[in-house]
Length: 303
Image 1 (cartoon, helix red, strand yellow):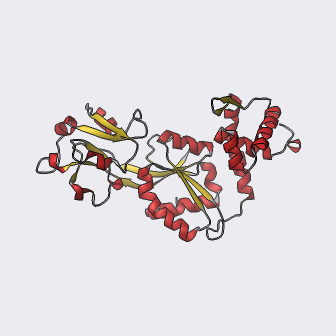
Image 2 (cartoon, rainbow, N blue to C red):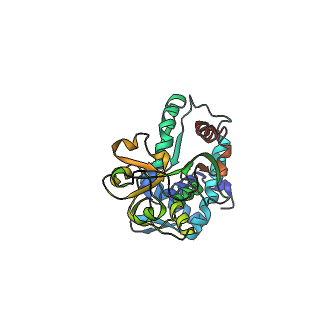
Image 3 (cartoon, rainbow, N blue to C red):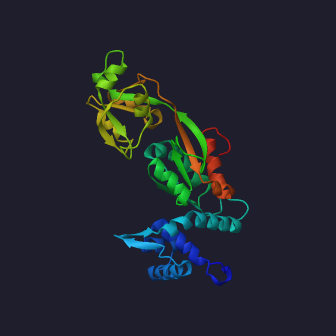
């Protein structure tokens, strides 16, 4: 690999796709190539790098240790090449771009109703691809170059990724009004005596609510765990379950159906909603344009 003049650099884009998709057919679709062409390229890459790179396990391909070592450097190098070949600016009204974003349904509820009309009005030739994942998975996808931006609460992000605060939300409690006292809220012992709903993609991932309770020496009982914010309020109607949730996900009319909002009976931290990206994207004019437009939704100026 030391003699670049003797290497087809297109092979590197095939390797990037294979490491991202871990499947020959999906990589072929991503590259707009035939499956035999991608398989042939993989065989050439194995010879060039003297490593299997990807080995079959079940219905997918597992990268070798050498492939995992190469992946971040390969992604960064190809991104730099793309930036060199990209015009100095980005004309959203004329240029075509696919923006790949990751967020929870909370993020989708607070961001997409603003972002989709903006793209249709200002960047009509650009496409939006939105996926959902947990915090750790979204950060990993940013590092691997699989997505451009991720949105959510990232308390332990580290220094590898860049981030910008968009806004802060706050927690509220939601319960069926028929089971609440006349003044409409519960004290801490009554709150802890009730069963609770938890919205999380993975039940074993620590959340701010239970971490705060644990610091106070308390623990609540979770009787319902589900991955979707949107359906959660409907599931607690007519029950004794309490949902402690970020206020921004709830519609203004949430109390019209008999549910009641009240403040948590203990102090919870604010909910900082941020956008995160890899520092290597800073020089991408289209990426910068999108970050700044999203930041302006929330009065944050440059993203």
